[in-house]
Length: 448
Image 1 (cartoon, rainbow, N blue to C red):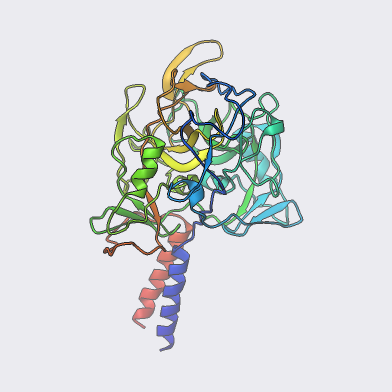
Image 2 (cartoon, rainbow, N blue to C red):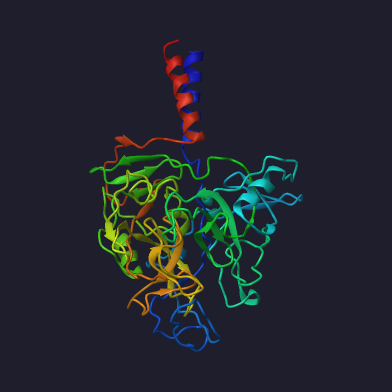
């Protein structure tokens, strides 16, 4: 009896460890926006549409703010709110993820190697084992009530500045990028020697890959829980058409929309979807979709999109004429560009393409400029802009991207449907190792 009780307790403990070990919080986006840039907005007169370069002038306005109910937009769904705590010693605790962060940003522009050297001797809050965060850890701090603005004076950072300090760039105010420890496994700028690491920019709300030696960014260090970002995928559904992530408690469509859609179409596609008896699907928000990126994969290194191979992804031909995979819409509006509210966030599971010219005018052409796993934004609806690229790296603007839908596994289906787990992907990371270790103990106890 004693051993049986221990075994039952261990089963419960192992389930708790394996499940919900990767907490995905709300993006804190509070408003929903119209998608039509021809409607009258709430912020004044239209200054005219830009033609590239990311330039924004006076007279910018918001699109109309609309009632969220029934739209499927990010702000319609309030999930677990971010929760931080000042520790009084220059550190901030995330009460959801268990991570501890530095309140300040360090360095006045450091290469990745310099940050690696700096963190080894860094000590704060009684800890000397701080580390450079992964891109998934870093992204847990992002929030999308930010607004890029036109200068430091009217910028609203994409992070909670009640807890976290930010640094602006000296040449361009938007250069507030922070290093992550994730090195891209693919090739950017068509240069096999151009190694880069992903970083998050809390000033303009994007994830891009930055040259490890050619770029100087800032650093925010992290301490604690190493399970954040580790997925626990398995296949489920009546037709094996659902991917369950036990780590986050989210369920995903195994396949995607098959065809590229504008943002409104993507929202409707997920809102109207019925799959394996469930009708409560939605287009994921930015935090949810980024949680399933696999930063160890890329079209160049594995011949796949940056996602676990249990997922099915539509293959495309990109702007360079190469085999590739698509970009995927989120339900999150990106308050960047003209007019404000006209762009929505996407994650590039294929190459993050751009039309690149060097500062001296050398044309590199259509290449991966930011890496598979980048987070950027596109106009919500067409027509496709002319030219169809913008910014310093010539980010392509496709307008038509793919949709992969999500639901919360704790929700009840609207219609009865069988959900039987019958396949599992490889479990990796500390949570999985603990799970299997406990499973071994349970197996032994069962025969005592």
